[in-house]
Image (cartoon, rainbow over all chains, first blue to last red; front, side, top):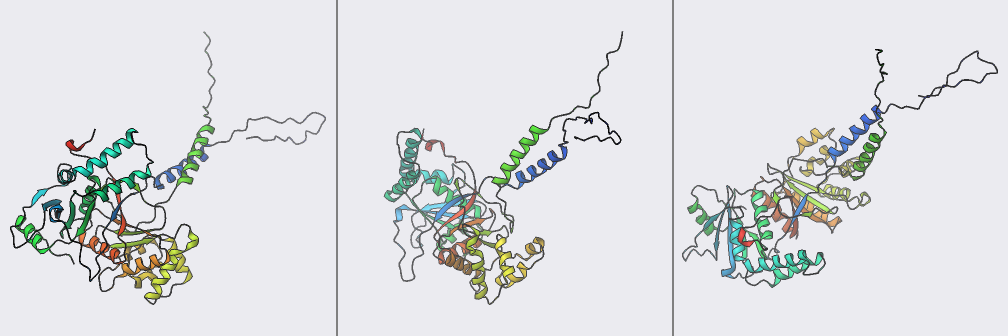
Length: 217
Length: 211
């Protein structure tokens, strides 16, 4: 540190001698502090923002309004059962006729995803080809119009399945998220969450005796 | 032979560049820091392939914890001058005949998500520390007799009609509760909402990969 050396009693003609030192500040405490603050901010900063998945459900039908008629052949029923199991069948379960056969699948890429893709092949390839053209530069459209184009494809879709997701009691929230995510991956245009009906309940129970498929009210 | 005398010196490192660097990083982190809000309950969200980031403002978050408690959070608007939380709290107060003091309202504006019956709100806001507050969070009642979540959503929408709804559920929350919450949202004509998830990669069966 620079200090001026004063010598008393040196009053004379001679020049006062000032000792010269290089100004040296000990920076270690400052570094310590900066380092501490830095660590604190690094740890408290929430860097990656959480992601969200949008879900649009059809409006609840009004009391005196009939629910829209469903094309039986396009209806794909997905029954979510406890312990991460999925059962599916096509059409309607009519108690007066022979009941449809339930097929068991899981949440893997060769499970329910394959089933959905096989049924939704046309729309899926249409969307995938369009996305591919955009990334390869064959199709030059602004990024944000890709979504609106996909939405238009969804509206034009006449062949793809209408998926009815029916969850039983013991199902966890992650199963719901997974299945809705499957809808997004496989580009299903129409799907909704509905209640599991009594016929399906007995079907599930005969398949898995002892599972709790009670009504959720 | 004469010995070579080595000058004994204490080694001195010039720390200035290091300090420069540290301060640069420090300033960067201070400026980019968005603090994690105080969580009412730890929630580990499920994974999905969606990569859409969560919106910044006008956000209502309904949290469902692992033990099926429901929490509610509404942000204060695009900046704090809108005082949306204060308005919502006062509306809830007048609905349940509770009068909140300005101090309690200010406290409420500073908090994040909460989950407790409206009658307990006054004690909650006067709680001395976050530990006591945490113990009071028993979830917002959502049964049909006293559906307070319905009220919170309704009042939040009265004061801010641009609200976007986000459901943040724990991966192991039970579906019946989630279903009830979705039913409450739909009763309020909220048919479009977001589910908070973590990111995971998309995998396709081989025959469907388009090359």
